[in-house]
Image 1: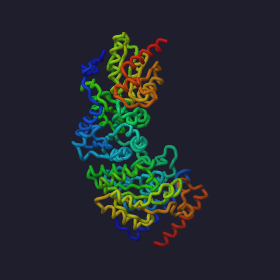
Image 2: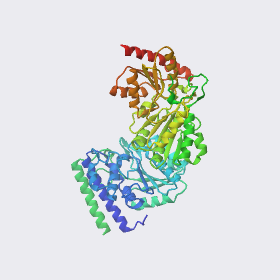
Image 3: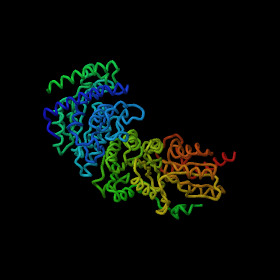
Image 4: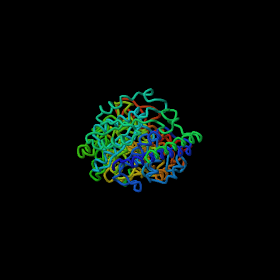
Length: 286
Length: 331
């Protein structure tokens, strides 16, 4: 991984803004899908696909590539937009999201889209699959890292904790999990639906290394991933505190935006905000 | 008479025939598959001895993973291994896997097209005294309806070994069904086993009813066929070890020849072997049909033989079904 110098930082901020704009346009075109999660995770996906990952978008089946496992498949618009901009498939294809015969299924499907590592959507099974992929790496003496992107809501599921125990037991240090701690799920705030705190203590008691970051700060995200790579005796959980709907003021922190797309009018308003932000990022770095 | 081409154990119809559980064949097959391919790995959910995963675990400890009582994780960790070049076999009782983890198998193994082999042990009421909670009688149906999934139900220990070895070589998701109780080892090493191909084990002259079975109950079907022949009723017995893809060609051939059919399985009569055969016949060659199996009820505690008799899957019940279907045919 190269150093995160100012020029790269400016590039990442601009790319994340571009990805947010394309998420809005893609969702409006699709007419259904989730808004808050993809916007909230845009910075982390930008950091992964444009700075952290050891990958080759032109060779999605390269055996030594780092793996990105999206456990909460419903935020796939951010995965698709990041992958398209990274060069996995044409940006133009984003318009086909959720439409008949598209490779961009409503929830990611491994055999439909090269570069989508697993099929996901039903919550709570991504970390387990990451464990299997990490075990295979260990058996084959491969160096690749497995990054598992998880939601906080899916920590209600027993399957998630089965995997947490298993990764701890087997010291799967080649797994770095990144938790989108945005505090919302479909029915409301996570701590009202099914309290998850103290999450950090829970993971530590299951023999994980835990780092907490601001999920919108590239320096913190990159530094946490570097720290995770240096931990050899445990898997690492990066709890990324994020703002759902980040970048669009009327979507931020509102759980009602979890599972719906913007209307055309709302999208226009959102795009206006994001373009203003784009101008600000550019002028700041000039 | 017995079909000589099936090369069955010469003691097939004798009472002192050797008895071994089909799960033993799974255990042996795992070791052979593991020797043949270093990518074979085994995962087990706290039932290593009784699912017969033990032999593999001892021989290849670095390729064996103890998952604890966590069948959802069992399936999904295997899914990750199976999309990373490994050939995982997951072992538990069928009520738990594929029972408790059905959705995980559906999404992360079948739809995900991961190369995982699901092995359900202790299937059927012949589990015995443990009772209905531990007797899987829905698993053929729930696995058969999944796209991308193949389903094998071996009839004895030797066929179970062959099916396990075959599953390791077939690319893609497979469900293998095994039983707890010792049952007659009535095939031989030379008995043909080809995935997707039903084999004729018995054929009397001018057969009037085709008995199509799967699993250890095929032995009861053979005993019934012998007694029926003595009573002047000619039958054919097909060992249909592959429920999916079902061997439509040989099933239709058999039913065209006989004109009536009885299916025999230690499973609910809805959705299992009987369902698969009925679907094949309804599309191609409808014929009078009777179903031997669990009649929309749960099992209970008891000895395996008591349960097989009480729930109508014994030799007597098979004979009665044959006679009943013959009457329907004559009408």
